[in-house]
Image 1 (cartoon, rainbow, N blue to C red):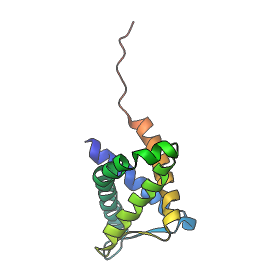
Image 2: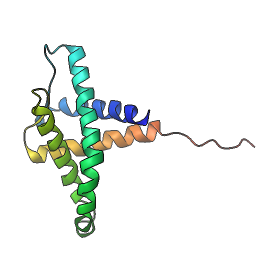
Image 3: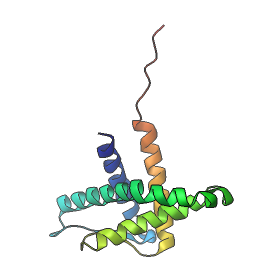
Image 4: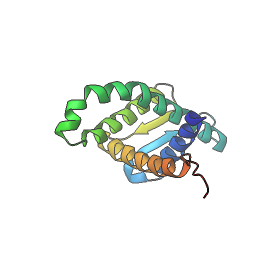
Length: 133
């Protein structure tokens, strides 16, 4: 259930990023390109992004641990941008999906996606039950 919520929130965040034309991040939906295909494409891209972030992102972050220390964690922005670019490359191979115009715009888009995910993560996190007094 957590994965599904994470994918839906990621899809929303990617959709928000595609609404900002300056970022040069776009979605090419499945054919014929109607609203349903756009939503399904966003969900598929979000699922691939979640898998890339979970599998490849974990390995890259472990290997880049010394850089995290040297840059006080700022390398994380570049790594997240790389993971978004990698997702765009993977989905672009299918003829649909995400396109990122420039790597550094991808870094900024990944930052916006992280902020949106953080906000929704704060809102949707399970509340601990406190005993009533």
